[in-house]
Image (cartoon, rainbow, N blue to C red; front, side, top):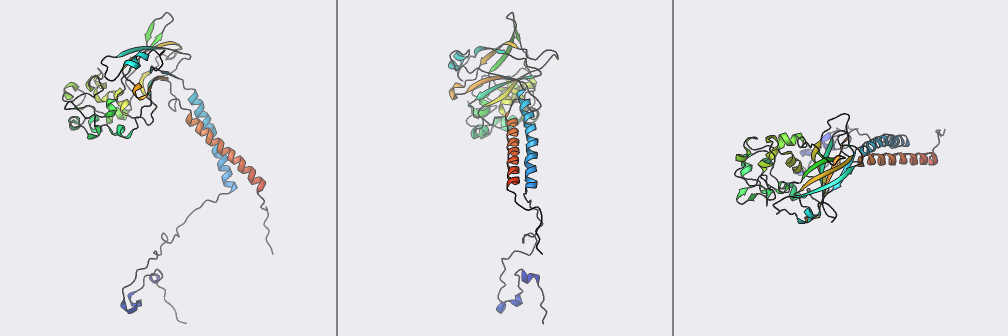
Length: 369
């Protein structure tokens, strides 16, 4: 017998030139290389789903998710929240005349007062929000209509804003600061809250306007050009947004909360993902450990109505809310955990019954001789 020599290249389809007929060019084979990766010989692990692995997984998921969901749901329900709509759609509403007669072209503000009662006291810090409905801040062109370089204090962007800001880029031949549709539609209602004593005396509730914006927004993303000194001179060659009554350097008397670093402005510039949203307006800080922040009783909300919403069928709300370790009131997360845990536990029980009822495999091994 003649011994045959093994050539790995020949097995892979790589033949030497001497083996070709008539010295013709070698035809390259399309066969993959003889490697573990290309020949699919890599080590692999594949789970084998059996009753002994699937059933415990369903029960464990159910037993973990259900208590977590109950905890989240109870925590959310313990958060106190009060909401009042002051749009002025109904004729009996205190803000009806303001809603009907006020527009973006109005030169004077409209004042209205809303009375309400808190049935339960609010403990700890209370957060005041303003809410808008049917306002699509998530529209693609609206979201892009801003100049982040200008908002970050870039002097060149201040005098030559980005074209993304159109049609709110220039006004009367001057660059708009801040430019864009987001800044132009800044929410500018003014809200003041009073506690009504038994004798009819109104005590104003102090509202904290600083500390409502994200730290990164306040100290990193938003900066005044040339620092915070003499903003009047810095913004002299610019124009205010079309719908604003005052220029950006007159947003606040406090130099640490004026211009582009005004926290009301920063909060508004962080666009919402849904057409119904709320944004933090003020903080009511707890001062006494023995007294609630907002005791139960009658309150008065004074509103300077500057923001018309009826033109797009919108609604405006004022919300008072406490928070917990998980944030504001939102029962959805707890309900989701309870639902998933219950479904897994129910499927585990059903599969366990099916397994015990229809498993006909013999417990012993029947090995023939």
